[in-house]
Length: 75
Image (cartoon, rainbow, N blue to C red; front, side):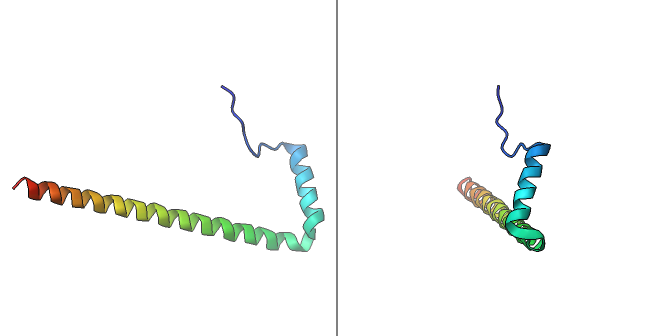
């Protein structure tokens, strides 16, 4: 079985990418760019956590409703 790895960069490829970023953005813009990337990742993780919690809460609420319906039908 063959696995395709995205972003599987080795030393020379990473050096070329970093050099291209340095040329495109300049030394002063890179920290600002990285802050923006960090904020984006943080927002993504926050949204993911919120969605996961809402799904768990919804599933728990559905289970409670199903148990109440099951309990009241048995009486």
